[in-house]
Amino acid sequence: MVFSGTATKYLAEKICLSLGCPLGQLQITKFSDGEFAVSYEESIRGRDIFLVQSTFPNSDNLMELLLMIDAAKRASARTINAVIPYFGWARQDRKDKPRVSIGAKLVADLLSVAGVNRVITMDLHADQIQGFFDVPVDHLYGSSVILPYLQSLNLEDLVIASPDVGGSKRANTYAKFLGCPLVLCNKTRARANVVATMQIIGDVEGKNVVIVDDMVDTAGTITKAADLMKASGAKTVRACASHCVMSGPASERVQESALEEIVFTDSIPYTQRCAKVKQLSVADTFAEAIRRVINNQSISDLYLI
Image (cartoon, rainbow, N blue to C red; front, side, top):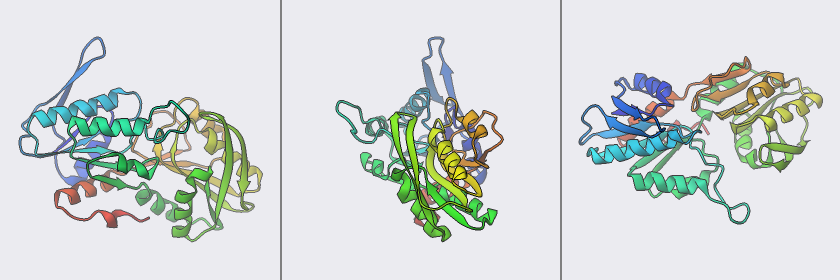
């Protein structure tokens, strides 16, 4: 049985359509002070439950998921599986300076204590976050829909670029799969979400460049990289990322940048208007993963890279 929280119902409906099953009946009652309660409107005793909810801001989305897990546990569900297309707080995966929290570990602990038996997620900000959980984690990749789209463009003189050194492993994997060169951007930050300086390492002159990242938040880095590559002689510059956070001035920055287009999955809903933003659905990917979990089959061959 598949259920959804408020924020990710659009994706859960697509997943259910792919699975050929109805979306479960779940009621979320909100009180005037902002508190809310979760109740299942049908019996789930002895059933395998899949709860679809991305934990992007605000924090209500995470709290909804925790309450859904707790309610399912108290209603005697056989297994409780959290399907989290976008795992929030993933950027807080280590202590990069003294006296800071590790939000990704905290969220993993909250889910475990609430009673989850398995987590299915996609493109974690750092792969090691899987080790924060004491339950199985099935880690899917947005490349399963992004790479076929890039191949369909039939771009000549293609170059894959990483917007920072930290994303070089991901970009290198794309470049190897597509059989094209890799270039890097070396950046320094003045503070969070603010890029101070950036330099290109590699040749982009006369090339069709695709910048690869895991998420785009304020779009400061990716638009700065695109403008710099265009100024360095690139023929066209596109970008692709799994998670469409796109907060604050991101849409305006993308619209005014040198980017031809920016491609995301639909792990996060995008409601703002920007003609350059394109979303590809990962509903079939998650549906197939759910089907294989139920049938105790391997999901490793779902990965293109």
